[in-house]
Image 1 (spheres, rainbow over the protein chains, first blue to last red):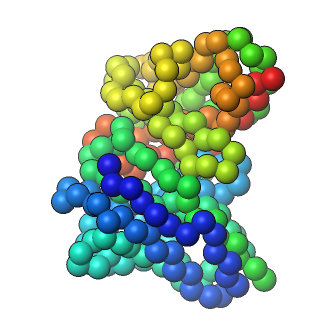
Image 2 (tube, one colour):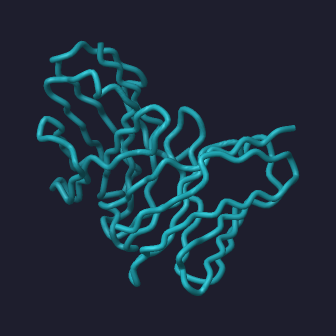
Length: 111
Length: 113
């Protein structure tokens, strides 16, 4: 399984765009990149998944460069309720039994 | 809301005791995974059940065991509790084993004294 490295914490302000970069130098050809969000006292919630280039949904965008050795989760115009821990996961797509969470990035959105 | 529920919300046990945690998956989800999350860390995969059979296991000893039932409910059993077992235990259901989009419950906070 590819190991991921992401910042421990980030601060932002309401209305700003937050970008969290995850490094995964040993990503394999079959690996996908998945991001989860976890609020305090709740289980993680799936945000977005991608393989290459750019993926966008109603919550976030995921940018993946051509070499796929890193990826950036972009949260547009954050609000206080986006304060959470964000986890970057790398693994085979059809490998639900191998989800490996790292330490995550604690994002604090300030007023 | 993910439609995944867990009980109890909190639990206090003493070292050496046994505990059973319960999870109710989303209707139609035939796969459930269990995770242990220590304070300040990411969830760690314990094991997964698919159609009532174990389908993968993380680096946890045999005293961690599970069951999955036909009615979309499941259990995590931990024997001979140790102090380090204190954690948030999360279950996650998914439509099938061939997906990594999992829907997590709110967790059970276990404290071992």
